[in-house]
Length: 207
Image 1: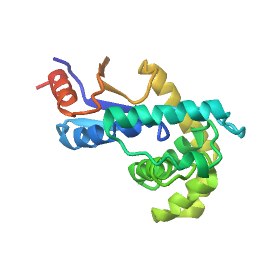
Image 2: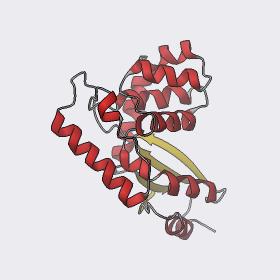
Image 3: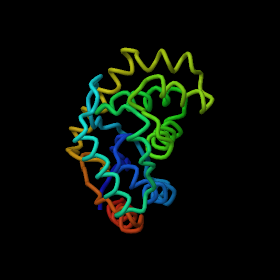
């Protein structure tokens, strides 16, 4: 039995294939959580900024990850991405886009848009122009989003997210950590059902 306000930290990267594979369970869990639990998304930063093309061997490796995620979770992937795009191992831009969209109350909408663009639409969210295009599709103030995306304020928020990730002792994505007061309780990820996670969380909550 724990005491204090309950915050469930969801540590993710919008370009992490396992996070995409987790979406079905995560969406269901989020809708089923008790009202006493607040959800906070934390962008984890899977891969630093890079302008270098992804080596072919690394492309094959990551495409293999997609196949594994699809087989184990049932998540859909469009492998045309690897033929149509020029991949870079760089997810920080997508993380910044999530934070910039949060300033317009569109955090989850941007996460959805990035994941659909990357995994289903064969678009490259490592590119700022693609992220700005997605902001337009969401009906955001594109000029404001474009400025925020490269602003020092968003860069500072990004670093704050990374610090929080480290303070939560998270080393992989996706991760869930329930925090109540000084207590940090990792919640095991279940890619196929939300029920085990919901039971674990409810078992940790104060009455």
